[in-house]
Length: 119
Image (cartoon, rainbow, N blue to C red; front, side, top):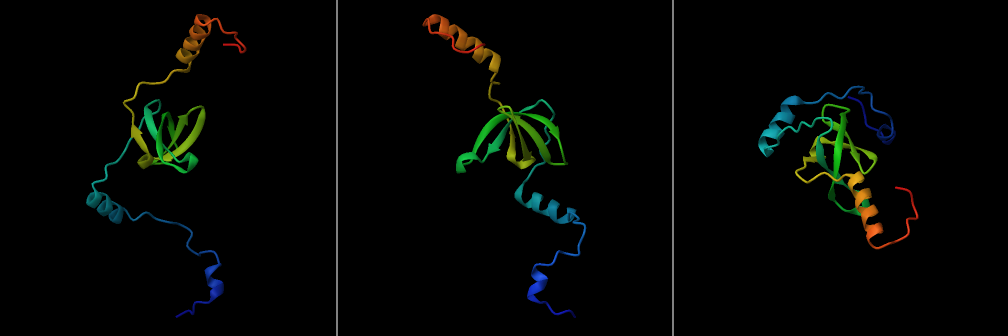
């Protein structure tokens, strides 16, 4: 039997590989009614947004899957990495930046406002 010393708390672990306990994971998922989430590249999703110390959902598109359950999501021209549990399928209409630019152009023309930027 090896005695545990305070220095042992800061030494790196000798365990090199972490193996998922599939049986425990299945039991946990079964007990809580968890369902596996699968998303395809290009699919519109809602990604959990942790900015500004709040939790909300922001619309984005799946770029690719980087791990079994981890996805890269394009949200507002930036790439977020989210676990499948932090994503939801979106039924919201897609926001198109081209349509917004056209509407802004029409608005500026309607009210005869100066165009200070290039569309």
